[in-house]
Image (spheres, rainbow, N blue to C red):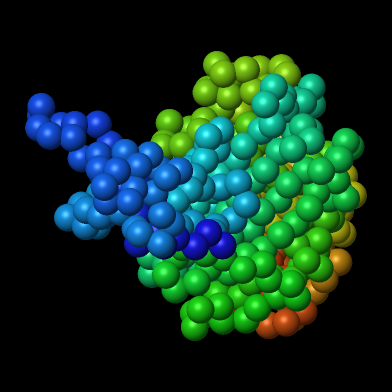
Length: 361
């Protein structure tokens, strides 16, 4: 952590800038006479035990750069923990992962000259040196920052470092957390272990697992980095059509499918998805019926029964749908998502419920 001394800073600045030994305003020279036992004011001839007269009337705030920032590696510009470092871009996904109502900020930086391999528009490969940060905020206070950094060629979870940090109350420093931390900074927010990160992200089966920084998630006009900007600024090896990067259906249908995409697609998101249930939405689909969610869930028997519920999604009946019941549960072993949440997302549940109840039987 950088430690500053205001007094030392003022002393240094005064010596360097304020004590010019040349005459000022045409007045008499400040040189010390030989009779005084000193030479003509040359620094090397001035006795070291005789300090110069240091002006102390400089306002303290003149040189105060603010609190030092010992924040997450590479995210903020010193000295403040508020200005982003060069090359760091803020972004916001279309569809949010539920984290018990905690606010989040997301940022990404590519290495100089780095390019995202988008030859498969549904499975992006990020260059070595890519960094992605996510702040978790409770009541305006940053509690945790997660950092993902790609450190070697290849793809998948094993090519990335996963680091977690907890902030201090002053919001000017973080400390790395190993082994997780419950109720960080006295809140209800829990910092996960690396094993929990793997449990969510390591099972995706996708080329790389940044499920919030993808074509569909960034195809918006809101604040933050967008797919259009990625295309225009040359971040992608192959540009992706704005028209293709949408979730099909009515607003109600796309909202529900987008919610499942963001909250379930990280695990249930590929041909090897658990139980064969996939809720990831690919680029370039024309209809709701073309989505993996519809094909692997609607009217499909469930391998995990929930009481009298035996079908993943029953058209027109959310109450009888196993997928919806598990969204509504926070019972260990039954709830979905299985970790990272202790509170049901009422708003997201309503979107999914509205879609299911509107499906034709």
